[in-house]
Length: 350
Image (cartoon, rainbow, N blue to C red; front, side, top):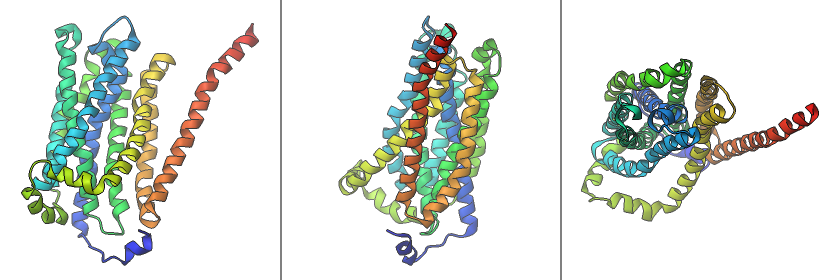
């Protein structure tokens, strides 16, 4: 549908007060949840290998820590299905509040898990359980937040409102990267004993703020329309209907979001470990690099959201994909050229 066609559709208007409440609740809540999520990712790259998976091979320890990060992604499809169905039955606001509590409590408890040196294999086992809970919380959060933001938009502001959850996630990344940069500036003894725990334990207090803000968020009109029908459906009927009637759309969304997530998490997590482990870069320097990238993303989100309200959304997505791909190819070329430059310099010295 073109922009001109969209503007011919009768426009449903939300009150400015309602839109502001929704925007604040979505941005603040999403930022708090993804602060916890990105915090775990960064600590898995920099700290958890030594604390929970100690070994003579530091690379093996880091890979073991990354495996716990991957476990959370295995839980997300199941959480997305469960909370997607619940969102149609009990409300988007209720699901968003539940997701915030799950993520905040799980993250706070991670900060209290004893190290491997203290309780042995029970430490990584507890870490994995809490990471699975984080995965469920994240799966409930992003989909529900996007749904709420989209349902409170009219036909001319869907891109603008749809940018709220993404901007909130980037704010969470900014806060997490700043927290990681702060604690990794400590000496190793302080970092590995208590320093890494501080931002996790702070989640207990942060979640209270987010929960209070979300409780004031209004439900959307769309939920009121679908709630009765959703309660009449049994079990996984909603999921079966979705797959049968919209499987093409599901494939496209899964491919687009999967590709974006793979590139995004490679930068946000693996790059931190790579710089610290193989390039000798200080841990806090890599975290500050993520900080600057998140600031740029926060500025870009509302601009690109408004742009998608003015031009075909597909063009915006394709343009973003091409830009990201060109950036990745340039980066890879620099990485491949680095050993050649070092060999050339060594040859000149000899």
